[in-house]
Image: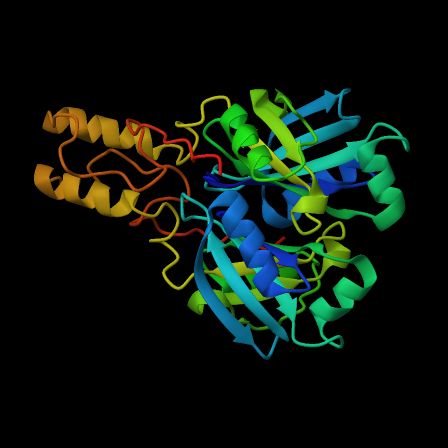
Length: 182
Length: 182
């Protein structure tokens, strides 16, 4: 289950110039900046106002890295899309079982403490696709609403399962049904 | 203000094949399918589980269309990213005022009744960027939560401004502040 678009990854030659551009034009806030040696990038995460999705700016650590080769081949631009999933291990099992080649058989460390894994673009219409299980997946789905709801529910002394059900994929108390592998 | 990533646009050679792939692998639901003669595409919108973001699949109506030329030059893959904004006219004014070239000086009709406009990739790190004002911007930001909150608040007979404030960019009663043009 893909909960939402978590981020778009944008390849750039200069992280500083890209940050300057995206913050000054759109007013986006840099919420994280890190170097990921394993992936060969310096990167920044910029949050949208709703704080549920991000612009990820990626500068390669060298020419002989995935993003470095992407820049040489295609220039600056959209590099990949990341979707939030409730459970990245289960998602890999499901999508792998449906014939999508996995770039990562097991999750690895992504931005801001997330567990991530990449799927092969050759099986997804040319789109390099990342699965992202945020550090606290349930709480980040609709940030802020959960706390507000719990405060109101506590004030009402509503019991669990009081009949006002959360919408699909958004409930903090909802059991996640894993889609069956076909 | 960019509220969230509304969608990613993916260029494909066969809309039917791309729909089959994205629905069978990810279980995404097709929520809209239309032909946009003005943009020269047949397209489908597939909703993520949270229903706050979409995968937009785009098949060109001919080789001599923007998406047709994109396919000839780069093959299938990520074509653009669309961000939800509260007011597309105000957003065009703001971002245009900050030096971003506007592909559309005025909004035009997009998928599912949205008002949309494109910004030039040359000013945004090679990323073709779409601004999307959904048909009911406030209600679609976190679908379902608003109705649930209002039901609980009505049951509690809480007055407006009861102190449990919605997070930035998510409040149904919040006045949208237009960012100042610099």
